[in-house]
Image 1 (cartoon, rainbow, N blue to C red):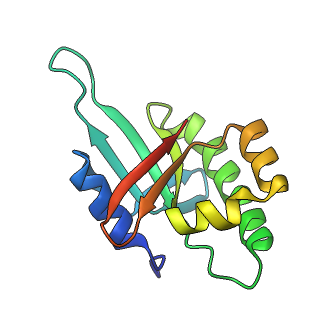
Image 2 (cartoon, rainbow, N blue to C red):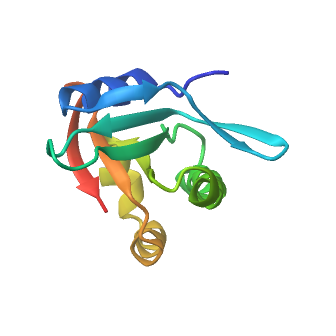
Image 3 (cartoon, one colour):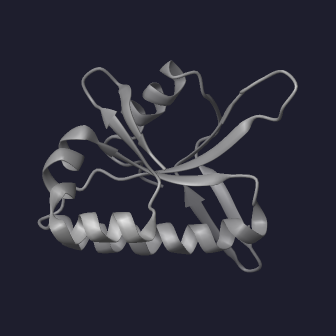
Amino acid sequence: MAKDKIHNAVRNALIKDGWTITHDPYTIEYKDEFLYADLAAEHPIAAERENLKIIVEVKSFVGHSVMQDFKLALGQYHLYLSLLKITAPEYKLYMAISDVVYSVGFQRPTIQLIVQQDILPMIIINLESEEIVRWIN
């Protein structure tokens, strides 16, 4: 299974931010299907409470069309989200993209409308510093 072009930068950014990578990749198993989300991670929030758990689908958006890449990524996101609600409801699903893709491609009015309406959780990563620059919940 090929990893996304920015996979390692996202992984490193999560680790720098205090997350522990628990799966790389994370297997989503439902009846006769096995799908693979890029990463799963946990972050301790307090000694007396449970860890936060996330699954991260990494997307580089390097195709010929940002909109075409977005359509494919959004479809994959919703497929994973539907299955995770049943198989692993303790996790929150995020899409990780670079800050460059977010500041250029994701400022298109159509994509902004979908992100806002859909409440698409995202992690925005600076690829050079391998740091999280923004969480969108």
